[in-house]
Length: 184
Image (cartoon, rainbow, N blue to C red; front, side, top):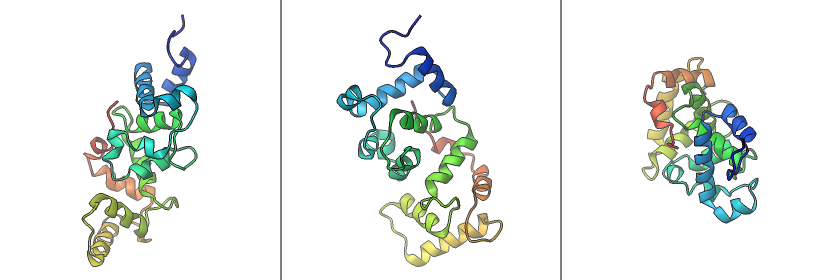
């Protein structure tokens, strides 16, 4: 008994289901969302990669101040361009079903702008600047804010937040999981 008319066979859907937090039906819905971003391209080249600008046109990402960084973290080439599997991974992590520890891990990666596995002063400045958008803080105010964050969260006083320190801070923020979500 096959899945006639589907873009994936049963085996592919089962594999995607094992690798994500989605049901088969949700995986097909995510594919439909991916395809809607550029139907003619996806129909002609199912294994192709959509440009980051196209991915960022997704309404849920368009409004996110970290949209470019999110695309780069989930892109298997780090370019921000995404295959369907990259897109599926992203949507899975942002789904309601993804556990908090997975969301925290990806949030850390998104906030680690220089990809050095710590959130340095520069990373924290980038995070604050992305969150404040056009409301640019004065340099002194920004420095004070970063110092306050590090004073509170930098438990080993090395001037940066490790993943464990970040995870500790996030554990005190019960609304974090709700803010790290895209509905499928």
